[in-house]
Image 1 (tube, rainbow, N blue to C red):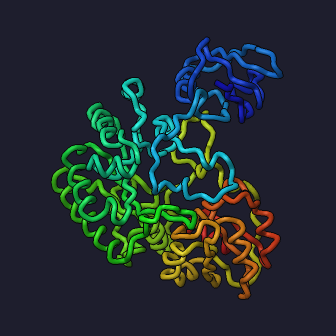
Image 2: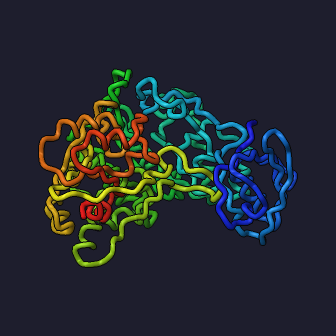
Image 3: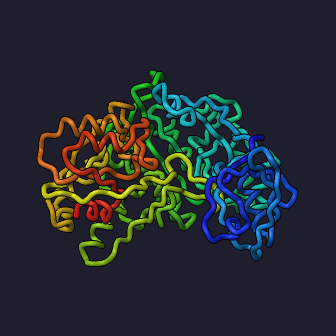
Length: 459
């Protein structure tokens, strides 16, 4: 087990006063070697915890003087200290298998670790879950957890996961719910595999077998041009409409029997079907907003709120879904942008987005213009890097944006890039923001992917 190291020490905090420094390796707390940040957080919640650390190869101890429950002021460089529980499924629809070669090694890591599910909202299939894991989750109340369901038919689920344990691992979902652990589910909908009649059965059995589920998000399959599975394909518009009809029917049944709609279809499915986005009440407080479910509705409703003269009601996006105070932000939950943005110049403001974003923004562009007080236009960025149906703004990459900017011949006072495409100031393809700004003929402004964010960037 490698030592977790101190990534950040906040000035004026107990850890800072105790002399702990960035780069120190954490050996133990109160004589206990923690396996993960969850255990670490429990240890440091006590008053005056004793840290054993390593600096420049030398061990030293430090007492952090603080009351019970007070924060230490430390953020570590890792969440899991022993070993991330990797995924032993071989799902043919897994997007990791569809990544191009040569990207950062960390992007190819498949985890199936319930701890990362608790900390960050990663979805786990439970195929590597054990009695010991269950005991810890129950004892420490580690919830909510996020579980990939995909299908309740054992043979279909095992086939989709390409793992025979997929046929039986939902028994752990039963056990979690029986002990009142909050669980959100997900179904990745693959046409010809688990949609249509299979989806009908899954939703019906979810009501009967798993009535305690907090929510179930239903998202369409994402395919890149690197997909090698010939049987996988995206929804046709008719298939998307049919699957939405199934989801809406079982939403109504769940509402009748459980008092909650439970099932929520992703925005992509509505866009693919050409079906209007449901009202906010149908999303029941948006439990899977960061899973792409209800983002369009919150965007449209935010515009209406701004038009009424009130402050934005959009969810505050921190870049993290969920974390312990000492845990680092990771992956798409990392800090999204940390540099000062330039002021737009006179001229139309170009909003860079993918095909889905364009479909959402263009119908309300006139309303956004009225709120911003300046002309706006949408600049569609074709995703050649991933290809396929990867059309969400969060998967835009630097090279594609540079290409779109170089080809843009229209006037521009600024180009607005959504912060969800960035980790810090680097795009998913490791292209830094500075390379993009060098290509642009106007300032590049990074903005939150909200109505208020777009309007604020345009002013």
